[in-house]
Image (cartoon, rainbow, N blue to C red):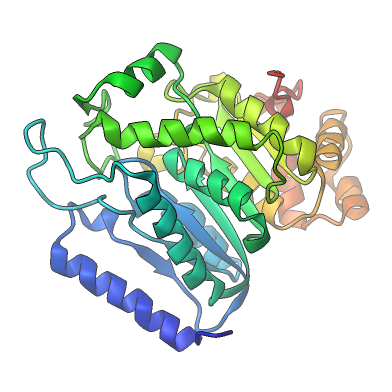
Length: 338
């Protein structure tokens, strides 16, 4: 490695000092670095959602750290800053997608010094950035974990408005539990992610991506499920090691799906599917076959031995495929949009 782990640790410490100097909106917005005193087989780089902060990835970050991996959850540009932000004084969010792309590439280089393979993950617009990296630089990363990626709005009319309106917008759930980020933003700051999502949908038709896990929810009323499914189908044509999983509407898992703090009572399911994807080399076809066998009543012991699955992961996946979690007819792994 060109940069020692000690030097990398100094870089991380410098980042946290700088965040203390310029002031954060809330301590939950502080960058989170869960790092062992040595390099690990994999290192995880997680990207939080739009107007939110690193707090969204603390539970899954701790889960992977406890598995023996290094984890980086940096605060994104313009996010999490203290201030009297409102319509007349909106938060300083970037309006140029290049700012975010340069940020991601910088952190990718830092991550490479902490692990042999880099796994990139993100929620919402963070997942859009992770998808960009998976398509643009697939040789640099091992896997991409896309949680509810923003490729378009749940209501297409919103996309048309986002493209033309310059106004300030406040989240409808701005006072919801676990919301430590900004309560509002200027539309142009979100528009750049909509434009990136449209580019990614086109790029996925002809480009080979790194293996991608797509996790979405029928209960998500923020982003477009058909566009997520469309993107997955296009990725799968060139990358057979990609997986898809969609939580049933009955679970009431909304857009902010990463933590119980943000009203997802099934936080552990998100972590389980991510761990299963990262720690196994099953293709999409093999994953579908495994799910079918579980639903047909085969025990996890049979499947575990044949597919060489981690015992804990195979048990958890078995639970996910049962009727209690709304997957008894395998709708959860059936992206129907073509």
